[in-house]
Image 1 (tube, rainbow, N blue to C red):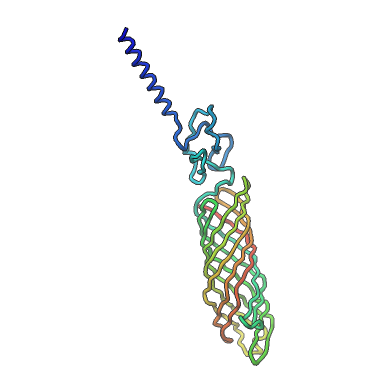
Image 2 (image 1 turned 90 degrees about the vertical axis):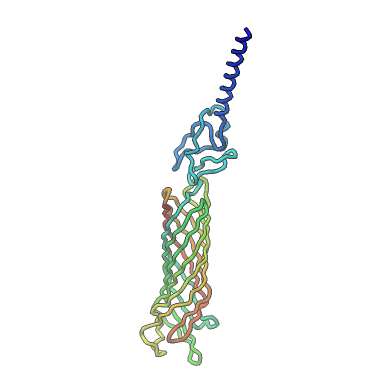
Amino acid sequence: MIRHRRALGFHLAALIVGIASLAVGATPAQGQFFGPPPAGNFSSGPVVPANFASSAADADWYSSENSTTAETVLVNGSSGCCEPAGCCADYGWYVMLSGAVQSRDDVHEIGDPATFLLFDEGFAINAALGHQFDLFRMDFEYSYFNNQVETAGAGIPNVGNFVGDCVGNVSVKAYTLNGYYDLVIGESRFKPYVGAGIGLMQSEINSLFPSFFPALGAGTGGVNTTSNVKLCYQVRAGVSYELSDRTELFSGYRFFDAGPLTFAGEPFGVFHPNGATFHNFEAGLRVRF
């Protein structure tokens, strides 16, 4: 009898240990989830809500392998998968191409309003290489601005002031480092953005020939000269639209500005325009890779 009781006690102990082992094996590790994913298809996997692990009826563990790095958020203190459409932006590199219709503020010689240039509406083209960091992104951008000169004026000491129509153009090349923040609005494909940048620019006067040049004895070749290199900055605001997981269209306003420039102009000496300010209405395309 004693032997049977000992044997029964041994079997009961073994059974208890086995049950305890199963219970320990079923205890969720941090970051795992109960049950199958809820209904719904998303671009990079199912959604696991914050309260998903609270249901006692959910007996199976959800594998965290279905979540991606770009979709990890806190879920009950652990990492889980999120992506209601457009919730988390994809990480990665991108290229950007854009064009703009722009207007350039009039310029005049510092301290001499009688010497000035008035510009027609112009254009700008831009190309950038950047990296997305969730809702923040940075890029390095090359920009080219060009405006035809409409009217020119010259104030010549002891001679007089001259004003006339003008041919020729003034261009600007700029290299800027920019930062942007994208604002997510629910599940909308539209994302407003704001951004700012700083960099270096240089300007060129190309074949500038006002109509009063012949009266001053100037040749017919016009003025061709290049400015010094200047610090510049810009700010942007607009809206992006997600065409796909990798492609976005965008449109917005861009303000670009640089301080006074110096042109070593021949044959009329040095020209010091008071700035280079542009107002751009741009549209373009970003592609992630």
